[in-house]
Length: 204
Image (tube, rainbow, N blue to C red; front, top):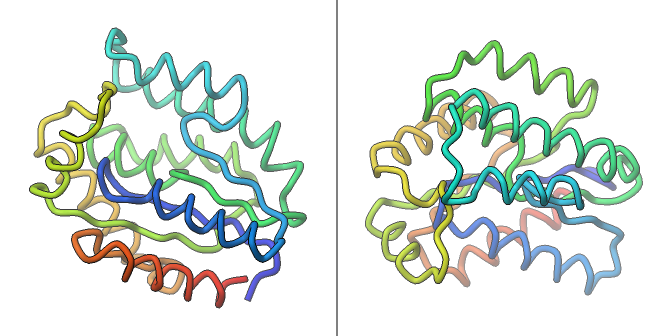
């Protein structure tokens, strides 16, 4: 389908996306496929500095400031990592533009046209080829967050916020069903690993 696609793993906290992107990375390494794996916010030295600032429990930014900081971190990734590897390696991204729309628009209410204009400016002609959207119910999300040793600022919102964000993700995925695969993270993790890897084999 694609030799060197951009594949994104999306989902709210506790949905299992980070686990599954790491599993896919192991698979690609085993198959000796060239790839890079990036997380947002974060990914390169400058983006990681911004990540610490955004997610610090001591930070109390306005929602628009958050949006601009996330965008700044993304720009650093695009300029320093993605552009250099675009169409040369498979690019795996733990959260990308859909996260900005889900959290900052559907979750926080920032104007969607403003967010889209920023993303359009940053990505230019670059497009995501496929997205795995991990969905989780509130009960399981709470259980998984409790197990975490350290919770950041985005792990501590009220449950209604995460419900709005997840509903936003679903709206985004419904607009382009062929480019998304919804993963029910409430089900057996090994079963989901197989589903995701089977799809990865088709994509690449």
